[in-house]
Length: 411
Ligand code: ADP
Ligand code: MG
Image 1: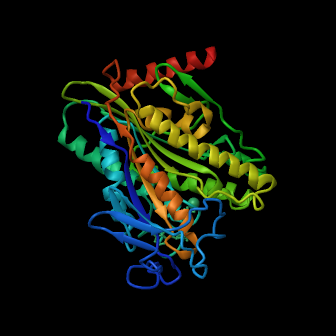
Image 2 (image 1 turned 30 degrees about the horizontal axis):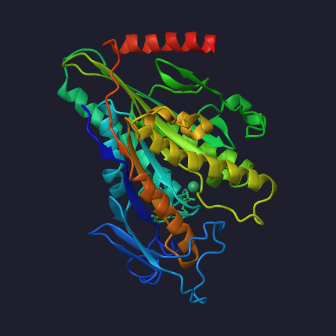
Image 3 (image 1 turned 90 degrees about the horizontal axis):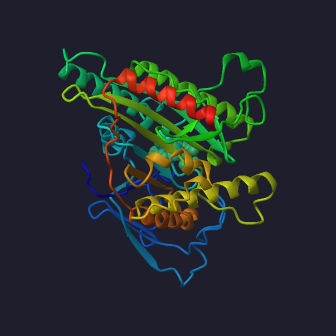
């Protein structure tokens, strides 16, 4: 089955003030004059007036309401959906991750990315709010996708009962990419507790290798088999605990790293015995704000350069993958695009949630996010099913392992 579809972009606005129970000031939760920032959820448009310096670090610079800058002209963008406050994570999940989980179980590779400046709601959307009163109610898309995947699988099993074997295998993995190094967030071993298990310490960076049969692989990555939603949620919790530990050691690095939580599905269709292998990635990207030169010195400048490079190659790769001649796809230029090579653009389903912080001081960053998102949604993909050549889940697994080992030895 081949159908062409645009990369979908949703725009999610966080409430501008979350101190009062997440509601923000005013009924819409958007505390900004409508002539500078307006949304229409019927036509799914955002209209914004900003200068787009694009060179302002999180929270600094941006629009100055006292400057009466005559050069501000409104720009209108149209997207697949605008999700203003108080849209819940539950609604966002139903609209975004649930269809991708279903499509991935049907054999398509899929990726959901959250993009935007630091503080705009990327982690809130993917992994939920920080621990607290609303943490369970507002749990993120990853936790919902785990529960949703097992609901789908159990339904599938009931419908196909008596047709033999266990037709679906689910594995999970989670990595963090920081300064072009790849870390396994499920690879922290308990024995290392006494040591420094941070980026600069005990946890090694993993290398990538490419296998003609299985695509880009991460050497040594843990991909545990998961038999229930509960097991999956425990792994998700473990990965985010490890992210928090690493973040603490690196002084709030989560906004400067990319986190990729991946479902690996192997599914046998009992009707024709065909087996599909597919992936679904949920990606919490690093903050997209660019630092002004004077702010970015030393370590921060290095981090900022890596982030700018990976986000701009992300766009270029998606565009190149969707073009007719896919000869010059620069996915090897950064770890982010290399890891996502076979599940981004081209023959995969890709959805981006552009996160916006609708506050006066963030107008420039918001415009820059909307522009990036608008360019992404011009790309057309042709999703295709990843059918395996053998029709037995166990042999697919064994063949994959044997091939990987051979290729790894030859590498
Ligand atoms: P990012 O990951 O983009 O840097 P976060 O997701 O950490 O940003 O969000 C920053 C803060 O805003 C957090 O305290 C988060 O709980 C809050 N927040 C973000 N989006 C929402 C939302 N839709 N509703 C309520 N609070 C939100
Ligand atoms: Mg974050």
